[in-house]
Image (tube, rainbow, N blue to C red; front, side, top):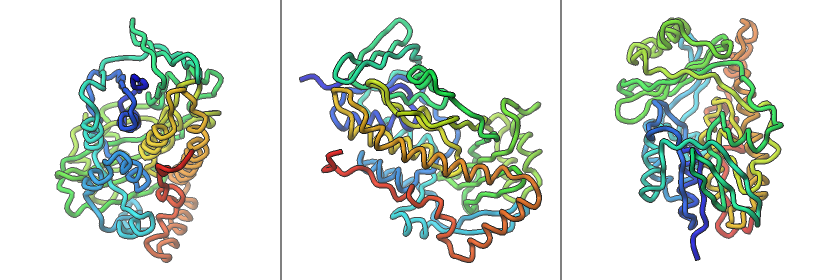
Length: 389
């Protein structure tokens, strides 16, 4: 018998993980990516223990753990540099049975691409139409230019502005602006001496994370109207917003080229989707449940989605079990991340002072206090092989 066919739309972290997972379970997989080449943006990704365990199913977990660049102390600071709270990699590993691995996105992409058969990924291919098909009936159809292809399963991993989501759920209200924009860059700076931290100010946030190979990943957010851009360049904008904050913030801004800073408004869904599937089409990652970056779980939840989908998908196209397994969980993670995001947007002096006191009190409870936001998230485990569901 011929292998069941799966088409994955989008070659981001979630789409590539789904392709590997489906390939490992005997599907004939094609990945359609609209970009002309797989060139991951210059950004980092946090791979928490829940995502690492999902990647263990694909025998890639240890390779990701090997990318870890730091296992010491990190925490939360004020713009003047005072430590508000601290935690340790050892505390995270003890609480969640594994550390959080901070890696360059390109490193994870390369691991996933190398796990796929040659010719699986077709770049420069823009999907212009989708027909969802029906479980047990017509296959799903994908149109790209003048070509149409059929598959027993279509995986929509086409990102936060997913055309597939809009096609499947035309009455859904769509995206909502989260109230702030984000910047990201990777600087060539020796990571020795750089301690992972976030610094929270009035409506602004800065994060520094050491990576491997002499690089440091930096990210920042600020409350701004949507759609704005710097009048000169985004590095100059970051200097205006963060240039007088504690070191190493100014030093890292000096280490990056003006054109290497990425900027993007942060959006979430105005309401959860009614389901993560329709017909033979399953949505995953940002196409299904975009969330704020404050828990570092966007990519992790996409990886979870992919492994669970591959475990549950069958050639007859019935995907209700996938929605049942993933919708409530991803909605919970998105809501929790959104609550933390709202804390970072506070700008009044009294509110920020109260926030600092609150997190400072958590410091008295030990290094595990800051990790509680990941309880019920980072301790997730994938379905067992003998799980009938």
